[in-house]
Each structure stands twice: as C-alpha cells, then as structure tokens.
Length: 255
Image 1: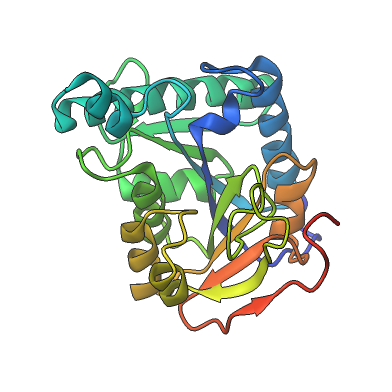
Image 2 (image 1 turned 90 degrees about the horizontal axis):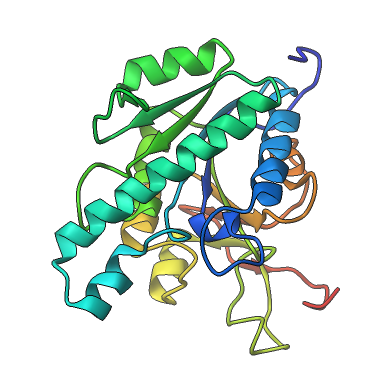
C-alpha cells in the first residue's frame, strides 16, 4: 500500500448495482466484468484508500418487480433479493482475493458459513488493517433498498464519501439516452435531487445523506480507472452534497 500517494479521500464506500455485474447478459454474473471491477478496486486500494463496498442483487433477483409480477408478498421478495446480494458479495470477494487483496464479507442476515455478521466496530477494524469490507444483505430489513443500505453503512463506518458506480457518467437533468440535449450536472444538491425526482438513488438514501451531510459522487463505473480517478480528486462524474449549488457541465453530452 502506497503511503506517499495523496488522495482526496481516506475511507470510501462504493455502491455497485447488481446489474453492473451482468455485462451483456440478461442476468447472472459476468466473470470478465467482475474481474475488471476487482482490478479497479485493487488499483484504488493500492493508493492507500480504505475501501468498503455495498453490492446490489438486481442481476439475480429484483424484489419489488418480482413481487409485483408474481403477486408475492413484498417482504418475502425483499428477503430473496437480500440473499442475491450475498451471492454477489461472495463472488466479488473471490475475485478480489484472486488478485491478492484481503477481503471480508459482512452480512446483515447471519450465515456463518459464508460471511461474518455485520458488526460496525469489526468492520472499521478490518478497514484500518487494510482489508476491503463488502456489506451484504442490505440493512437486513425488507422495504429498504441497497441504496439506503449503502448510505447507512457509509455513515456508520464514517466514510468520507459515498461513490455510486453506474453505467452513465453522472447525473443528468433528463434521460441522456432519450434526450440528446440532456445536460449533466457538475454539482447538485440533495434537495434538488429530491425535488426533481432524480432516480439515481432512492429518496430515502438521498434524504439520509442530506441530513447527515455525506457527499456522494455518481460516476461511470465502466470506464477503466474511474474509481482511482474519483478518489484522487479528479473532476469525474457528478458531486451531490447537502448544500451544493447546482451547476452543469458545459461540454456536449456526447463528448
């Protein structure tokens, strides 16, 4: 671990969507994608940054949509979604350790054969010892998304920033896929995100971050080296903060 490299943040929590692990598939985990994600995390960890990760489960099971489609009980569907996040967490742990990085999975639902139970002080101690900690099973409660779990865990471990890895390069004022004139925010406040119903995270996660003054950076996870660029303080993605003035990036959305 490099001690001489200066970074903008010492301890970060990264929220990865389950869908980001699918690659070009319709479901499941792409071995190539998860290796690439692991490589980015290893590269970032080498800068001396303490890394925690929350991973979703949408590539395996989406609780809300599945419950609606099949008439399932919402709570039951959410618990099934939590188990999907454990599968992703264990897969990511395996990919990280294959590249030589010590990793611990902590689950909000106890399953001792696969993961440690979530214990805040133990998680912080792992981070201090240079281990990556992956938080699985959300908050352990139905009706809360992994976005909310990421916000909660980031505050519990006293992270400097919450990083939201997506397939686009930030937050836009409208859908950049359907609207070529969409403008990307350089900075935006949580209040404006809630007011404008921006869907990059759910409203509970936004409100939790705003009320506890936790900054968030939304960036394109698919670009090589993007995590390293963010923690190094480079101008990447969109920064969301409690009192941040709304500013747009001037360059065209396609450039």
